[in-house]
Image (cartoon, rainbow, N blue to C red; front, side, top):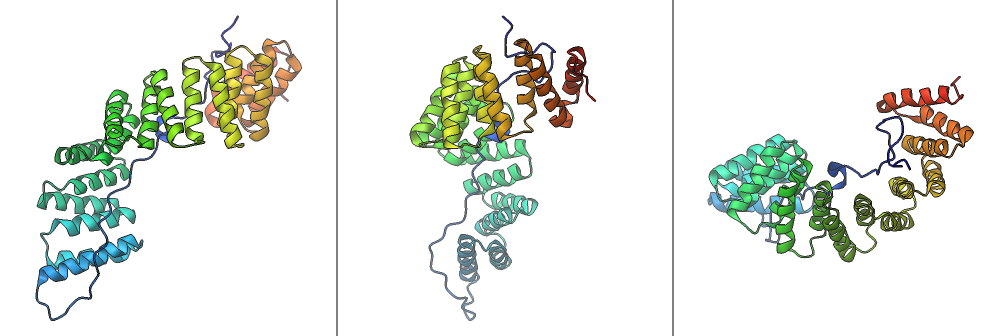
Length: 346
């Protein structure tokens, strides 16, 4: 029997699981560390000639503005503090955080640079600079920043998590697994770290470990759509198709419009050799998303296998109609099949 996960035309539009990419599926890195709030904000005493006291007042008021989401106002206060005392690292770090929240990432990096120049042991400034570098897509620099933060504080949880997430995006799966493992040792309930470690295990083809991590996420995060979906993909990776189908059905129950869960359920039915049920399942996909090209294609292949040629031709025609530009080569293959099978396009 032909392996139903591959189609006869050698096309990349094979019947395959739509495992979302690591970059889009993994949880985003944690945001920067905001400045502390909780100190009473006093008015500036104009006749107080203590520059440091005035600096502290501006910093405290800037912190309060950050807490209230007034990042532009916070930048002004931190700038006043810097003008009064130019060599105090906290004001630079805090202004850098506010700049990050405003999307002014290069200005933020400059401030964090100054903060660590003034205080080479400033853990949060290294971490915050890493966050800004992530925003600038400077991943190597961000990894170095998180490493610097961990040099100062080996228990800095968010640095392990953020570095692990970047390493995952960069395809360094084993290193990412190590960082996420250290993160969950520091916080055994760190749901996102378990989830991303599961993604790293999956990418590394350790499907059993991935299943275990996604199960842990489900334990901590009841009715987690992302965890059931990703566990279903991991089950499929180890060819436990019935378990995969159960997880995809759970996703659809929790989120009826989850097209990729519908699609992967159809693929799992196809992979286990249940062509009739797979065809019905692909029908559910295209009902939810009539432009789901790969479902039309996969359905056409199965119908052709079953010698249901008129229906196969209809499915292939729909594929040609909805296929996006990146499927141009596959369209050529399908048009060839249409001509060969007697269903030449108008």
